[in-house]
Picture 1 (cartoon, rainbow, N blue to C red):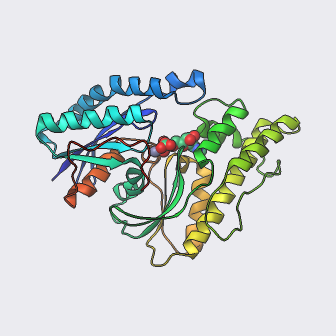
Picture 2 (spheres, rainbow, N blue to C red):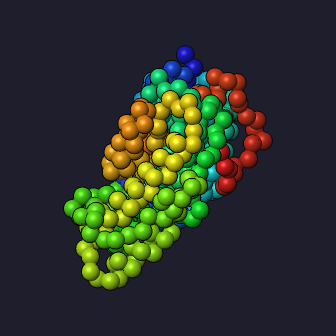
Picture 3 (cartoon, rainbow, N blue to C red):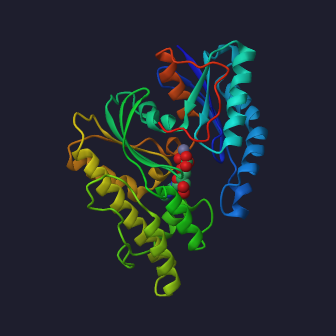
Length: 330
Ligand code: KG4
Ligand code: ZN
């Protein structure tokens, strides 16, 4: 059985994982930099790059030890090559190249978004192409028709902020701390989703794109009005995001045929209200709903190792001249 080592370092988590070609996670290790970035209320690229450089090799060693394997037992090394903060991506890719050269194994340069897009197939081995993927993270908000490995049709994207970014900025405006998504979710549990009238940008429009900038400004106005509690704003904001995601996804489903499932991935998929609403939408269309477990929704090494395994199976490996890319659309 093939074994792939996966490295992730594109944002603020450093991760290494070992995954088998038949979808077993043999080990996964992760170090989050949350505490280092918290004083700044967001990810500081220079701090991130240095922290990745310090954390990555110890995580690789720990993953190998956990799986009871040596580097020589690994069949290929997969590393995120973009998109993301370039300093961190370079750390991961250069480490991947060094390990591949040292062990005489092939290198697989993985697009971080492809990692998210294929991660549901690691969680659910029976998931077949084509499926509709809603990828909602801190940097991305896209609807993709996933037709095969390397075959992604982008049906929608955000015209301004990503959904996770909107969560993070709302958290900051409400004084809820960093990272914002989980904090907003916690506060929203104690609030009334109908308390604050907020816009649903683009809902009802014929193009399945997303927009969250107007919502963000409305949250700021609601806060400054002094009329609402933090909990009510958090709950109303979450409901507005959920309504936008569901409306846009419904339109994309209407415009696409032959789908096997509706799949959600990316950090925002960790949000329970988001998952429940999408699950309801899938049910109304008679489609299975697939959401990877929470640890696989946010950035991790296993999704990179798994994307590497999917590519390796098709003979898709990369040369040592492959470059790190800050921008890399799927
Ligand atoms: O996929 P991810 O770990 O990193 C990338 O952006 O690639 O996603 C992180 C994003 C952050 O914006 C974070 O606030 C959001 O996912 N997030 C959440 C929740 N957990 C993480 N948003 C809403 N509710 C959550 N529970
Ligand atoms: Zn991500």
